[in-house]
Length: 128
Image (cartoon, rainbow, N blue to C red; front, side):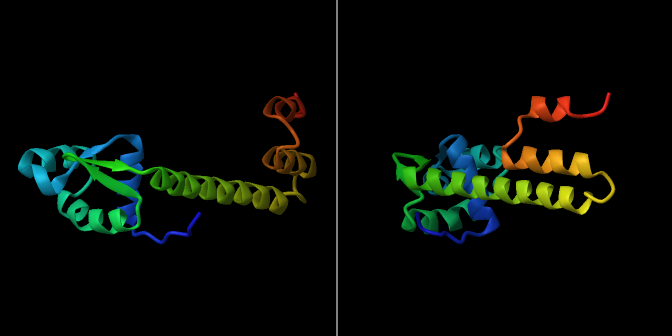
């Protein structure tokens, strides 16, 4: 899968398209612009971002709608997964930093983050 560098507004548009198609801002005038704005997007910025995302084959225009492609969906979820991995890494590093103060707790958090311990097992290992 290609590594794609997008702007924040392009990522936001892609995420909105994964959730549901959007009216094409270039073809529908004010009514479409209002529908786009209702989703928290700037219609003028969407108009700027659509050609780039179309060229990258992350979205396509069908009739009067903008829809995400399979590649666009994969790129979106890859970014979500990478953000989750980074957060999990932060949790593990936090546990490591606190190991001197609470060794058992830190080890349990690290094992939970690594997936070698279930949440139920981790909760069961806490002192009563």
